[in-house]
Image 1 (cartoon, rainbow, N blue to C red):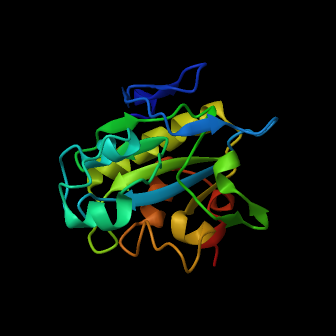
Image 2 (image 1 turned 90 degrees about the horizontal axis):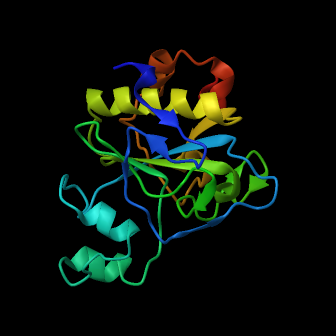
Length: 195
């Protein structure tokens, strides 16, 4: 898969992604530009792949009576991410990268709080308990490359890095070294992976 597969348009929407505009976003604070990419994982119901539940959650149309987990944990929740990468590598976009999505929650990146203000959130369809697919890594690498060409991104991190003790994703099966190889990014882009 070529890095040229994706391109960020002037409005922050990525050509090559399926656009599913979420109402769950805000303007970024004045002068805040995306400088951090945050990698997450998500599956709904937990441990199950496919279906429309992730999109339905980000679009505020999830039927919380359809599964006990939804009723207990997601009823009334308003969240979003900029992107979701499905198991087959399909890329969905819910919020313009120029806007603030609601993906990080209470978070801190080397002393800088409120990571939603300056980050782009990418959800991989998956769990902490299972490896991700090659197609997902290929799409992620191409997307990250496109984002770096458009925004002053200077770091990539996991949700667990910016919300330690509260979040565990993308989990132990996410291969950071593989992402670094496929993007050919220098070590400085991976501050939590330095040895």
